[in-house]
Amino acid sequence: MKTARASLKRTDALFLEALDRRMFTAAAVIVLSHGDTVHQAYYGTLTEVSGSPPVNESTLFDLASLTKVMATTPSWLFLSAKHPEILDAPLTRWFPDVPSDKAKITPRLLLAHSSGLPAWRPYYLMTPERDPQTFVRGKIFNERLIYEPGRGFTYSDLGFMLLSFVIQVETSFSLDQFTRKFIFEALGLDNDLMFKPNEVVDRIALTRPDDAAGLVNDLNARSLGGVSGHAGLFGTARGVTEMARQVLLGLRSKEAFFDNSTVCEFCAPAGYHPDSSRGLGFDTNLVNSSSCGDKFRPESVGHTGFTGTSLWIDPEKELVVTLLTNRIYMGESDFRIKDFRPLVHNTIVEELGRSLIT
Image (cartoon, rainbow, N blue to C red; front, top):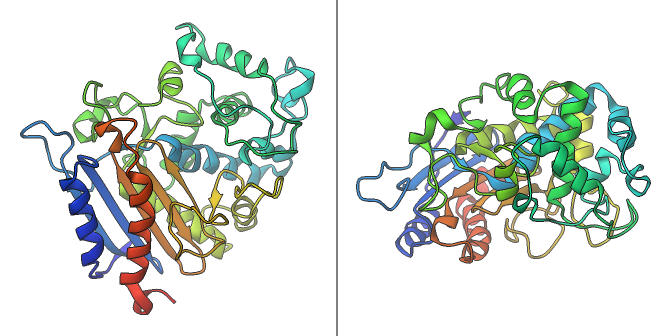
């Protein structure tokens, strides 16, 4: 990524004020416009403990649900480009024992959050240490569907857990092995995007004061050993931004890492339900309360993470904004980030102006 400079003084002031108000201890923001990094800034320290190292470009954040678009969705972009039929294959292709009510669920439905599976369950309260994946898969298979597959929308962590289980059966690689081998290393991001960052804990912005650095915040992901399709990935702002840049390149070019037609398919609204703004893996900006504010175009795609992270891509403006924080450090019930995200995105667009965005 080339680096240019944009004077985003109001954006910078927002982060400094949020840091002063203890919205988080650590934050990073990168703005990419027309292929160039026009703004990048790092705020705060890895913890509130005196002497804690400052945040910098190598700082890793718990990405939470950004895992869905940084690891799981790219894996399916990769797989379905090579084998287009895989998106619409029934779960019986991989799991002959799947109950009949779920036999027709496909990866496409899971990616679009339209499988009929519930949003969440506290499997971590019951997951055994031995073979937790088989246990969790069985629990998901035994869940009662909320609606017939393809006839509704429910944002579902359970669906993305299944997507990672399917990848393992299909490829013989676990999600962390698959993403590292075929995506992160290929893009030069294996030092910026990783599961189980146990060897680089000195680079991690702590998510909770009482947790060890590198311990994933999501408890279901934690019970699965730190690797799941819905959460578990840690990343730097650079890593998230570069993955977003590859998605943007895939949307605009047939000579990109991700296949053009596949990326376009994933980033378009899935259309299973009028209340859903979801594509395949990605969210879109089709709703009024989007975290990217009201200045990104409706066809923009992105996602958020519970720990205080977000990514948004506006293909028409060729604009990417990566915003990473450790807001959970201040308490799980502190949701000031919900107002902060759209404010930051609106301010960035206003400050960039017509000189960098057309």
